[in-house]
Each structure stands twice: as structure tokens, then as C-alpha cells.
Image (tube, rainbow, N blue to C red):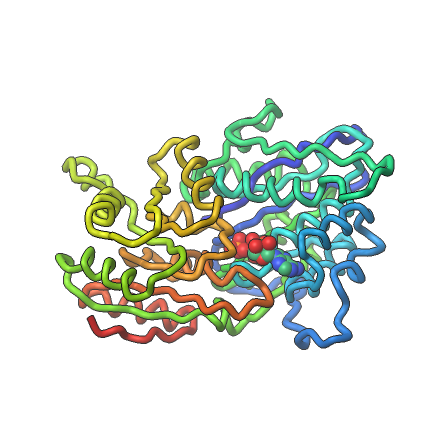
Length: 421
Ligand SMILES: Nc1ncnc2c1ncn2[C@@H]1O[C@H](COP(=O)(O)OP(=O)(O)OP(=O)(O)O)[C@@H](O)[C@H]1O
């Protein structure tokens, strides 16, 4: 099972007695499934919003504390996105769910509203656990959770806001230290086995509510079957699949440009100069072990050095890659979140759920390794629900790789427009 998951613990002050625990796995990539389990139910999209559509408050009112609803509306969350409208009633009913919806569609708020509908901040023990693949994501989900938990403006009532603690890199819960280490994408068997333990030994699917949230579940029926067979979820788990025929937002414009390897850097510069983006992410492939052994500089350094000497535009150039230590990565993300124009040169660590709503341009300097990686990189843009902001993903490819991009187009059902250099 190759899974990436979101993991951070809501360290709220709660009592040993727990009404219901919630465990959420924001899992951007799940193993393929071939069979539908009879008990599992698949929910397909409902009709689009009309002016009589329920607001988030209408959907959440009986379940989520008023002060959280007030904060939610203060932040600007008024109308539900499709996944929120479809998933929340099932989540509030206590059902295990697999939330399968596009990147940037609001899955984080969906499971946080469920968590706030359940935890009791006057009692002390851990009542909810969110598992994410990288520290950046853990901090991001923590930030949204803290925003929702803050006391609404002008409310003096007794309602105690809860303390949100991100347990990153081991955290204080000793017995769970092994799997609270955040900062790896569950790909190796060792990492996946610690996740299996989390799913099956540290707690049972019968004494918790389990939610998987993902923008990509290739052959999702098989994953659904595994969930029930391996007792990761209860047998009546619901698979909520929003926009099943459109894995990526329709307002995303895909482009590609063919050039030889020697011209890639210059081609990137010309693209940035002609697009003049307000901000952009330039995804670069991770350096292979062979290239490291040969003492070559990583592609990220080559791109950064080239842009620092050749790019004369107004945007700051920022680096975010796996090999950086956590503090340097946190500084880079802080830099980018400050707003203002920037070009973020990044490896795929920035492709997992990082939320930069103003991002409009994505450049694949190196081709993503898989179609799912393409989807998650592309998903770093088009992150403003209800907005018609035009967003583009441009892939720079050498002639012999064109067929790979075509394969991704077929798998993810999109078309790319060719730019002539
Ligand atoms: N109901 C809403 N109304 C307006 N904006 C929303 C709403 N729900 C979420 N958002 C915003 O949409 C953006 C994307 O939300 P979020 O990060 O939860 O998406 P996601 O589905 O988890 O994406 P990914 O699959 O990439 O992790 C965020 O900036 C969030 O603030």
C-alpha cells in the first residue's frame, strides 16, 4: 500500500473519557483497487449550487459549536464547496468516509469541521489525529485549525477556545513517537508498516471514525476494498467522489513546450518573461543518488543560480526542497506566504497539499515522475473555490519525453496546448 498521509495531532485539552475519536488521513496517493466491496457505498456528485443551496452554517449548525461557525464565516467560509456539501452530512452522522475530490477543493476544512463537531475542549486527552505526509502540511493544517478555534471577534462568552498543538517529528506522545515523526511521504515499506500499525493496532476502526481525504485514488475501488478487508475502516465506509470525470479543475490551462536539454533553462526564462506571473512555482526533479555520488549539483541549484544571474524581473527567488532542514524550509514557506511576488523553485515536497491561494503559474522544469505527481503539482494552483482566476501549468519537455506527457494527459483526462519556442 503506497500511501502518503497527513499526520498531526490536535493536542486539544480533553478528558480521558472520549465520546468518539476521529482519525483523519489526508492521503494524496493511495494504492489501486480493482473490486468494490459490497457494503461500501460510492456517492457521486450532486447537482451544482443554486441560490437556495444550503450555506456551510445550514449544514453544520446542529453539530459544530456556534463560536467555530462564527470564526468560519469571519474567515470567509460561507458557501460549501462540492466536497463539503456532499461529505459533511455523512461525516456528522459518524460514518467512515473516503473524501475523493480535486486538489484545492476544501477537504481540509471538511475534516476539521467534523473534528470540531466532536471534540469537547473541557476534557483532556487526544481526541483527534490528522496524519499528513510533510511538516509543511502539518503546520498548514494546524494553522487552519487554529484560525477556526480562535475566539470570534467581540465574543466574550465563557466558551473556552482549545489549544491546537502540532506534534511534528515525534511529539510528546511517547507511545506513538514512532509514527508521529512527520516529514516523510509514506513510500518505503517501513514507513507504510508504521502507518498500518496506526490504522490497526494503536486503535481499532470500531472505536473511531476514520476519514481518508485524497485528490488522487487511482483504481479507487480496490482501495475501498482494502479499507474494509484490512479493517482500516468499518464495512459501511462511504466513498464520496466529487467530479469523478474531471480529476483536475476545469479552469486549469495545460501547456507544454519542447526543447533540447541545453535550452531548458533559457526556455524557462523566456516563459517567465512572457507570462510575467505575479507568483510561480518551478518544480524540479529530485536529484538521483547517482548524480549525488557523481558530485553533480542538484537541478534546484542549477535553476536557482541561473535565475539569480539571468532573471531581471521583480519576483524574489525562493528555494524549497527535501534536503533542506526543517527550519530553512519553514523560512522559505514563510517568505512565500508573506505574499508579494516570488518564484518558488521546489521539488515535489511542495506538491503535497501546500496551499498558496494566489498561485497562478506552475512550471514543470522537469517532468513529474507519475501522472499523480503531475496532478498534485498542478493542484498548487486553482486553489480559490468559487473564483474564475486563470491558472496555467506549463511543462518543459525534451522530444523523447513528449510521449510521457501524453500518457499523463490520457490518464488524467486533460489536453495540453503546445507552445512554439
Ligand atoms: N467553503 C469555502 N469557501 C471558500 N474558500 C474555501 C472553502 N473551503 C476551503 N476554502 C479554501 O480553498 C483552498 C483549498 O482548500 P484545501 O487546502 O482544504 O484544499 P484540499 O482539497 O485539501 O487540497 P489538496 O488536495 O491540495 O490538499 C484554501 O485556501 C481554503 O482556504
